[in-house]
Length: 326
Image 1: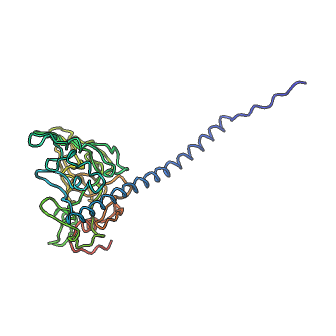
Image 2: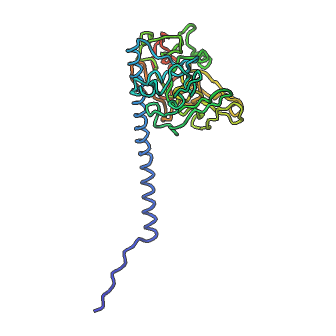
C-alpha cells in the first residue's frame, strides 16, 4: 500500500515576520522596565554608600569631638576622605606603611624620602563611587609644571563647605538676607567644627552630596573628556575628582572655569541640580531627575532637580537661621 506523505509543517514567511515583530515589541516593552530596575538598584547602592560615609563622619566626630576638615590646602594637602577612611573599615589605606599623613596626597617623595601616598591614592574605592556613574575607574590626571603631576582615583561624592556669596546673584530677588551665615557643616583646615555648630538642625542640613563624573566635564548629559592641562586648546576639567585631593570640597553657587580655550564661558541657564559637575556649581548625579544627598543626621534623601535653588542654599548652610518649608 502506498503511504501518503503527511503535509509538511512549517512557518510561512508572513507568519515568521509576525512572530519576529511580536518578539521585537515584547523586547521593546521589557527593556525600559529592566533599565528602571537597574537604575533603582544603582540609586539604592549609591544611597547606601552615602549612608556609610555619613555614619563614618559621625563616628569620627564622636571619637575626636570634632569634624574632619573639608580640606587642607597647605602642607600636608588632602581632602577629608583620608581622615575618615579608618571609620569606613579602610584604616589600612592610611596606615603608616600605606599613607604618610604629613605629606601631600599625590607625592611619592617627601623631604627627600620615599612615601607611599601616590600609589595608595590611585586605588579606587567602591564606597566612594556611585554605580550609576560611567567609567567608575577614571583617574584625575592634573598636569603640573614643576614636581609630580597630581594623579589619583576619583570619587563621586564631595563635602559642600557652604554657599559662596555669588549664590545671591543667582537668587536675585530671593537672595538670602544680608548677614546670613553661609558656612556649611565641614570647613577647611583652621576652622574646627562639630555637629553642635549646626543650629539649623541636622535633619535640615546637608553633610555630603553627589558631584559625579569628575574630572570629565558634564554639562547636562553632554560629556567632554578631561584634559587637565591649561596649555592645551582642548583643556577640560571638572576640578576636584580625586578622592584624596584638597579640591574635593567647595562652596556651592559659583560659575568657575578652570580651563581657557575649549571652555570659554561657564555653564549657562538656571542653576539647579544636574546642570553641570564643574567645581563650585551645585550637585550633579547620573540618576534620573535628581541626586542623592546625605544629611547631618545620617539620613540620605533624594533631592529632585526641581528643588528650588534657595532651598538648596538653606539646606547647605549650617546656621543660616532659615525656615525650610519645601
